[in-house]
Length: 458
Image (tube, rainbow, N blue to C red; front, side, top):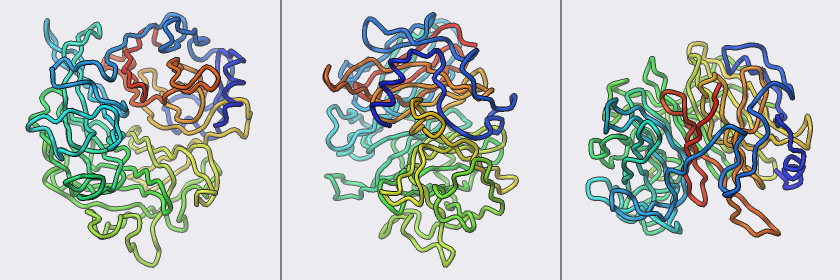
């Protein structure tokens, strides 16, 4: 997104920032029909934060839970850099027990400022700088503990929660042993126990594939795991499903293996070519991946037969709802090799119908002065709508999307990491809600900051 469009938004001071999009929001929510509007949605204009950390609507407040560089409560080292995907898990009731456990990714490459400290029993590759940290909170979002949950991984981007209460963290890289100093192959999914990480250790779930993972979502009925691939260069990433040999077996069951398949939409080699919301494709096929470990060739380059396979640029957020899996394509650019340009899509796949539908398309076509580019991390809100972390240029927001299809600003980053003349703000990531719905947790990627936002949620 251009800085000009964002500057117009900031100067307008609108109560509701209507993201330009087309599509049926009733596909996303079991509510009323979609209708864009400027009044009656959201929580009012964002109020500038005097501490210049996080702008929120009036009546809301934030608490900083953690910042990069501060000491971990465990004494294991400093809080690592590059805060990314995150999830919140229910803790135990009773005095002295944690009510919420957060697990947070650190998308650290070899150039990261602060690595995830190596901890015995939790480190996969001693030369990997990524991983996860876990934060234990009481009922008032006071931090009870903060520790390393897994270390020695690389470029931990997003992931997703399992139905049995663990976090599946995803490596967004294909680097093999001997590359960038790594001693082991990377590009895997790892399972993390938010309460006691030593129960899960640092074991790659190799059967789930080795590629540039982004996010996952689990079908709670079948146990099938859906996975997105955020490949950087053409040919772009694929959308996968993993059929576990031991579905819904609980912590550690994914280590039993299974089979990995990639989605083929007949007649659609590139999802970016589909521009009309509501476009629907039946007969979706799932093709076995020839070499899930990508020992010689990245999966997206492997031979899937004469009919090929379906690709898409920037496949990112993924979540399960309404007997369907939804996944996000943040953008597509023809100059980078996509079939067509778009500013963000949300796709819906219905397993019981083998049907794929484009349900929302973001973009500037309705009003170029309004935001609406590059949706990234996405989660369901307690109200039944969505919270979307927008990953573009210029000012960075968390947007809410109501059941009625109205879009409103929920938060805006106020930590300027640029200069007064050329300001820059770190993207948001890892938006998640507490199990009771009373707190929204969200990360600022850089400078790494985890916020707990409370207020008059509806």
